[in-house]
Length: 374
Image 1 (cartoon, one colour):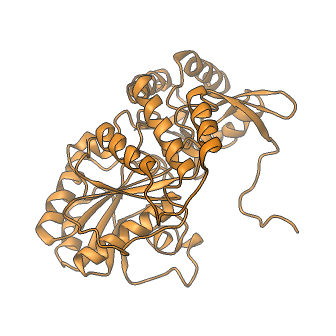
Image 2: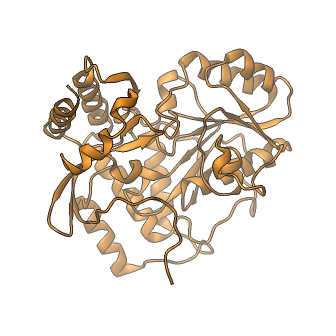
């Protein structure tokens, strides 16, 4: 049996990691500014994370959600305290797409409506409902296409209000920062208009913080820069530092009825331990603050480079848009300078490093980037 073809693979296999660095089978060291697609939040193989996971494995790896699990309670308490949403409840699942699926379901149960309003160029996942709300026809099968999803342009307040004024939408879903689209931010005015229009029409506001959340933007959630609160927040990626886990944070205005949402593997003992370890390290090592500071340091170091068409982002979620003559730069960074970066489209380099990145590692990237472009 062969593997099903999903992604085009680089001919590199990381076999060891520490902090912001990984090593391949030949022992070559790479600076990881991709974080496995924003997943590695506290760094590869953080000692606290490794110890807590090992200890939990010696006790219990899994039991179903038919019994009490005090780790889930601890995780909910810690997350509520650290993220600024102590009044929301926590539903645990296994991935970001699954989180958004359950966000849509909760919104539809609450409002009795069946339609979702999403933002142009959005990416919300690859499962059925999530991919239907993703503005990319190339990954939607005929089965996924539905009249129950409408797209409205990012930062077009008039179009947003006109759509919501119909009163037919269960929820509006917005990414804290659009990642796959190329690092585009909803403006503060757009967030505030969205909150006001949702309140006026009985529509729930879902903040998709799967990539932009968990401190990546320099705030716990990117939408908190706008000073608004969301009714539902979906999270995943950095939540488990590599162990699969996702969740939605649900406003207390939404009734939690038994059987409305459910999961077999979600919130299992190992997943909760991973998530608790992440929050513990984030708090003790002030990683949200580090993301804000080093992110700004990187942005400042990139300004003035004439190869850059536009620089976008917040914290450690940075998009570097290049002219067409630099389309090979991502490969050159990897194979010549041994630096992993992400991409978005043909000419945007995405930086999504672990939140514990140091200025020394930032300097290594800046020196390599400027050497290849100036």
